[in-house]
Image 1 (cartoon, rainbow, N blue to C red):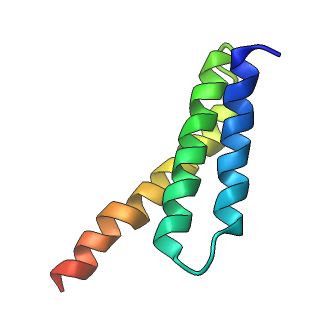
Image 2: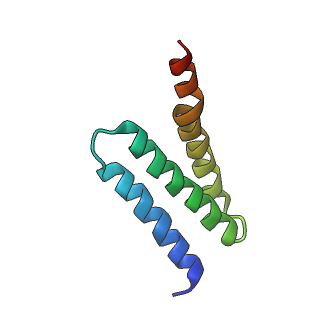
Image 3: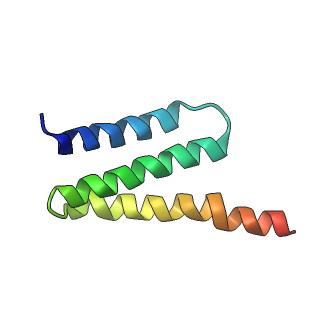
Length: 77
């Protein structure tokens, strides 16, 4: 097993852990975002594997939005 496979296993573990978290939605989103980012890195390491990169890029943007952008709007109200 090479180190690139370990990156993939780490990404998968982070995503699974995010689904096992409790009711703290912010923590779930944060761990899930790190999992998606790790999958992005994994997709790039696999010579730009677009079926891995595209959905995880979208997931990363969605999680980033809910963690940082929408939160700021809520705090400012």
